[in-house]
Image 1 (tube, helix red, strand yellow):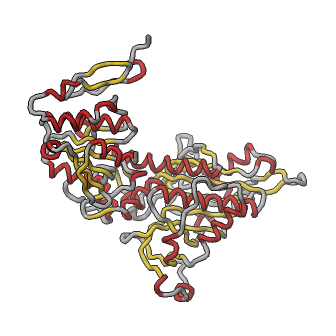
Image 2 (cartoon, rainbow, N blue to C red):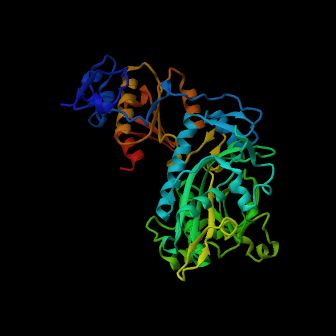
Image 3 (tube, rainbow, N blue to C red):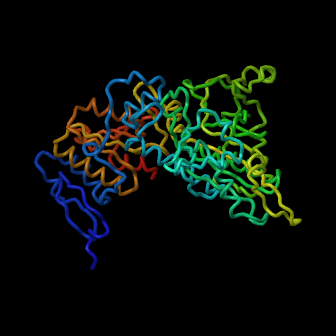
Length: 501
């Protein structure tokens, strides 16, 4: 028989109850319900949860053992809401201008954002790889961009005096990889993506991770035989982006954009509306009610994907840089939206801009070499985290959409050391954890007000408050952070409400 510890990992020390090993699980002894001072209602409250209690997954945490360096005061250098709240909530720490360390709470959010990005890229048919952060200057000389890019490129030399750079983007490198291996049109279409750290030496890095020098980027690159195929690849990514931002809990509106230094003649920015947005945007109000394509969207359906893109580009939508006052004025006044917006994604089709100078060709159907048509597609997860906060907050703190929240539930023990409260919190902690819910248990010996403030600041969607008064009636209090709605529920009903059971 294999000992349970070989596959269950080290167990937490349980401060409340006796641990009994059975089949590799940690079970709570029934003795907790017989402790002095635990009345019958509290026993029922605790007992209702016990059949579900098992070892808690590592995704759940006790706040007393977690690294969460919350700041009471707002740092002077923080100019926008997301920067202030990310510093105060202990999500990031600024190490130098525009460069941040991601602390445990922030990293949990960042990882959830990345996972959604991966899932939707994979769903669209893109294939993940990983390219290095440091690139050779020779590749950029091939494309003609090394001298043209400007001072934002961090240029370095290795110990052999070879010119290198910290990649601001990867068009050149992915083109070099493609040309080394793909020789025939039969291997097309192809879309490759990665999630990697980038560096652009911003003249004035401001606004926290919204505009930093070092940032995480998902960049995808499509390769097609001709423009028609490339436009379909562009349209697929357009639809994938709509789905991605929807899953973040955001409504992103695609707006025609300038291609900038990337190049090309077809480009859209995906903009979310936020009062604290960085730029002015204009659009038709109907965009706010457009339904995002479903999960079962067929990305190989050329006409279906084209129709979706046509719908999402049929009405007026523009940033201030591309704004046409006459076209906007033609919209009925009641349907006009003028607001602040934040860019969260950008897609480009640029044809043979890189394949021509870098000789990235395939053998066409007629046997002749053909330069491939390319596109690139970017989402900045580090920027997205900040953008979500800009769109989802109040005076008390962050209001995370459930899909990207660092934890789903915060359990607050309102009377630490009280036998009934301690036992009920422990049972609920284990029950939710066993159901796969990410739980942060505030077991600190602190006043309730401090616990409420922490939970609101870090923005956990559900807050469960457990105190002697509620337990005497067999109830716990459930608060939804997004709406402020509060309910007194039995523990079982609270679990059902949180899990959607």
